[in-house]
Length: 236
Length: 255
Image (cartoon, rainbow over the protein chains, first blue to last red):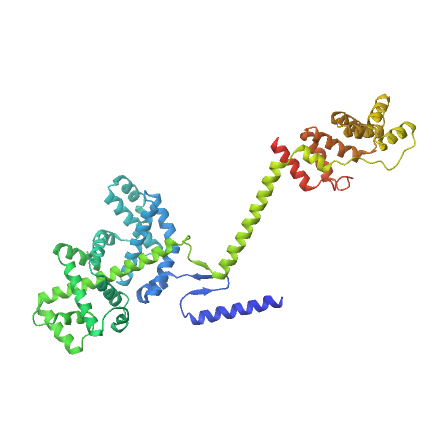
C-alpha cells in the first residue's frame, strides 16, 4: 500500500518535471509509454516555424497516423506496398512544401487534405502508367470526396520530380552548403564547422557560387525554367 | 548580369544580408534593369528548389527510419526498459506455451488403453468376511488368490448375490478374462438396481469401467468414469482425476 502511494507520487513528479522541461510541445511521458501527438494546428505551426528536429517528429507523427490508411487506399486501387510508400513520400513532401510556403488554407482537416493529395498523385501515376480503366474508376468513385482542390499540386508533380533531379546534379559540397543555409537555416559560422573552408568569407563565396550554378542548371531550358517557377511557387 | 552590380551582391540581397544603403542600390537597379530582375528570379527559384530538395531529403530519411522498423505504430512508444520487460515476459510465456504444447503432444502420442489401465488398476483386497457359507468359501479362495477355484465354485452357484458376482468379477480380472468380468460386475449393478441396494456398488462401477477400458470399449468406459469423477462422494472419486479424464478424451480422439 505504502509502496504504491510512493510510486504514484514519484510518477506524478516525473510527469510534471517533463511537462515543464519540454515546454509547450505536446509530449506526455509516463512510466508506461511515450505518446507524441499533434493537433492539426500544432502540426502546421511546427512545420512552419520549427527546427529540423521538430519537423522530424512531425513527419514521424504523420507516418504513424496516416500512412496505414493511405497505404490501404493505394493498395485497394491497383497499387502495391512499394507504390504506397512512394506516393506517401510525395504526399508529405508536397504537404510540407505547401505549409512552408503558406499555401495551405486549412479548409479541410490535414487527414482529408493528405487523402486528397494521395488520391490525386496515385491517379496521375496510373495515368502515366496508361491504366486508364482503373484511373476512371477511381475518379468516378471518389468524386464526392474531392473536398480539396489539389489539382495545382498534381499538375506540377512531374516538374517537381525534375527539380530534384536537377539539384542532384550539383556537387555534394554545394548541396551540403546550400541545404544547411537555405533549408536548415544555419549561420555561416555553424556551417563552417562541418565543411572544409578556412574562413566564413571563403564559405560565403562558395555558397554564392553554388547557388548561381544551380540557377544556371535550372535555366538551361527556358520552357523548363518557366515550368519550374510555376511548380515551385504554385502559380497557375 | 548587369555590369554595375556585383553578382554576389544580388545573392546577398536575396539572403537579406545587405545594409540599408546597399539594398536601395540593388532595388534601384532592379526597377530599371530587366536582366537583373531575371537573374534575381532565377536565384529565387534556385533557393526554392534547394528548399524543396531539403524537404524531400528529410521526408526520405524519416521514411527509411519508419520502414526499417518492424512496426509503423509510432504514436505510442514503450520505454526501453518496459520493452525489455515485455519481451522477456513474452519469451517466458512463449516457452510455457511451447512446453504445454509439447507435453500435450507427448501425452496424445503416448496415451493408450493398456497404459491407462495399468496405471489405475490395483488388485482388490478383502478385509471383512461375511456370514453365509458360500460367501465365506469364495472370500477365502479370493484371499488365498485361488482364482481358478473361485471361478469354478462360482460357476456352480445357482443364485449368486452381489458379493459372489463381485468376487468372481475380480477373479476373472486377475485371470485376464475381462469379458466375463464385465458380465459379473454388470450383474452386481443390476442386482443392486433391482433390490434397491448399493452393495459394492462403487467398487463394481469402478472395476467395470476399468474392464471396459482394457477391453478397448472406451465409449462404454467413459460415461462410468465421468459419473465417478462428477460424484464427490463416490469411493473412487479421488482416483478418477481431471488428468485421467483428459487422457480418456485423448484416447477417444485417437480411436
